[in-house]
Length: 250
Image 1 (tube, one colour):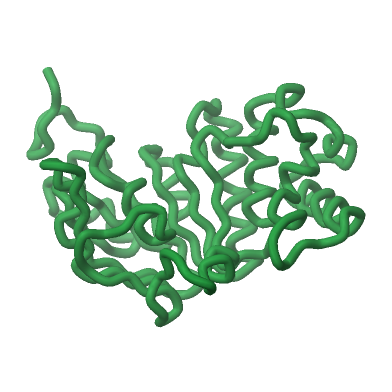
Image 2 (image 1 turned 135 degrees about the horizontal axis):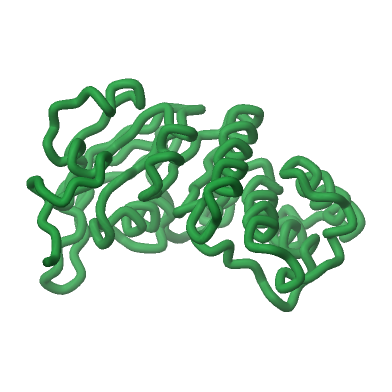
């Protein structure tokens, strides 16, 4: 579904991606791990065309990723996104947040239909219809994250990106969100890419894991093989060891 070959990206003298090769199969849930500042978010932005790679190729369903032109809107319609921190619009009620894409663009739905679809998605993530007319500030952090997930799936996307989906949540709520992500991705048959530092999330969400380090994919394999790999970078990261090949600030 998604294929990257030799993708490079630098910002000035800072070379963030130095030849990334990665494939994500249709319906697969891939989790990308790696330290802060290693380029994980830049990688997602390159796939979406928000950042233009300096070199390499990116294809989605066998077609080149579009960064502009008349097909750009249709290309983006294939994606859903759960942003780090939720990124809800404070000035809009919950249902309009969830239905944001449904109320705009070439595939705009009637307002009543968009509201009904939003309430249905809220139910899917465990929120009652009464939540629809509240504002984000009236919700707990866990409820806001559920609303963000409902928005990510509202337009039935083929591909969903999750950027640190459990950041700021307590362990119990993080577990709830992990379970919801796994359930909705499986039900929809969507292809998922997740960025996270939370190893509990990795084990709950991933079919396959890729570690980004030094601008390249250092290791990639099924979740079942992650704990057995002898790669020292992966072992240090997943076990949170201070000693190892990954430099730490002292």
